[in-house]
Image 1 (spheres, rainbow, N blue to C red):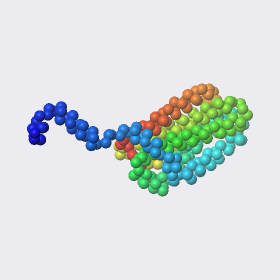
Image 2: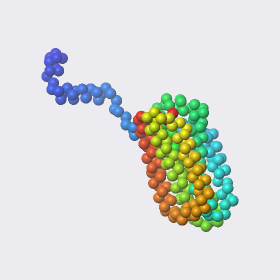
Image 3: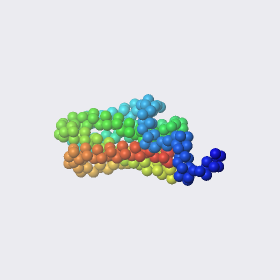
Image 4: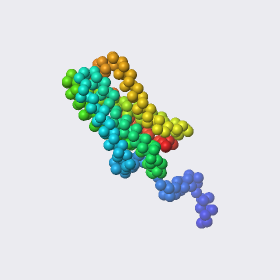
Length: 254
């Protein structure tokens, strides 16, 4: 039987099935975004994640500890609560800002853009790790504020306030970065501004709460369970944004 006779002997459905079977064998299966994200997370070590930014992490720890020193001189629970609310994201914000500045100034962001993991994905994973490290900072911070306030409020209340503050800042910061990445895909240029805006906004919020005498009283009036609930919701949003950024197909941070 000739090739022409063989083709004529096949129906359209049989030819389509034959073509599909050939393509299935010849072409590799398409990799989903979530599958690639899981592979990247499994292959990414902490050494690779912190390569070139070890000094930023050490400096962020020093700045965070220095920022918590004034806790020892606060004797009123209102002042301690306000300080905890503002200082809880200090380590996270400092490390994020230092890393973004160093990446921009040293040019390391350029060579990372040619790796299998995009710069956008690397930033999202770093934010997740930085957030986990910052959670560890909230425990001694809450303990210091609890002792400084002469145990006028419970330790769990201070810890819940610190956790809520950190989670809100982290979700807000990552949300701005997500919007900035989407703008980059449409031609906008996010740059370092996407990292600095939440830090500046948090500083302005702190200045506003400081000049308002009733702000500390409002913080103290909120029960711990509410702060823990806010922390859980903001953390879920944070993780969701990390996953969303890691599975974006068209945006690229530069």
